[in-house]
Image (cartoon, rainbow, N blue to C red; front, side, top):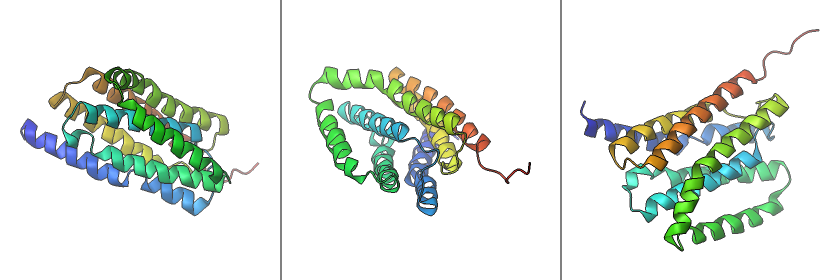
Length: 203
């Protein structure tokens, strides 16, 4: 299989996986009607990282197939955010978050140095989102409403994007981001599985 065929396979498999990536998490939240183990701070940082990354790719006119999944991921994250706010009775905060994200999105491409600076911080923002989720799990020792499948799928997409980045743009900042995200996503996946509730222990 040549590189071109592998590139198309990686691009389209990533796009397909991202179309359903957050659905397991959405279904878990809707079934439980609770958000135990799910970090709001992690979700907000992830959403910010997605917006910065997609804006950077669009600004520099990178091939659409290298970032086409991000509008889908952003839409799914918004649904998860609304579910968390709803089940925690904080829906009034949704308008505040919407104003901040939309306003920030518009500011990103005002000047070249702004988007470059934002992208240089993007890896730290995205890493912060994973660490916030890990901290939440370590503190609660309960991953009852966190979907291990969602995190495992996220790991795959980042690994696939390492390959597509090397083949297409070779952008070092983007490559470093995906390597770091792959490691942290795997760490979260393992932690979620470790803290999954099992049968009730008898004293």
